[in-house]
Amino acid sequence: TGFTFDDKGLTIDKSGSEMTTLINEDGMRIYKSGGEVLTANNQGVSATNLHATTYLIVGNRSRFEDYTDLDGNARTGCFWIAK
Image 1 (cartoon, rainbow, N blue to C red):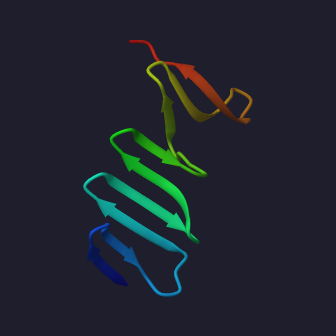
Image 2 (spheres, rainbow, N blue to C red):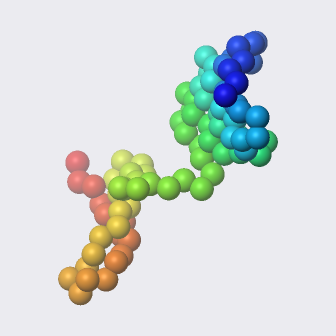
């Protein structure tokens, strides 16, 4: 694994790996095969192919999650979050 500190920040990569991570004072960027797949900064988080394994909250009032209905069928629902 290679660690590079320079004016761009901290770059973490490994020869032969398709993934590279760049961390600096503005946030973090992750690249796959040269294309940016995740950015986390003061504007939020932007990701390609985001997978939430438990649930995903969008905005202030909606929550997406998988559940099983009364007949045993696997479903995904959007639920209202009361505040």
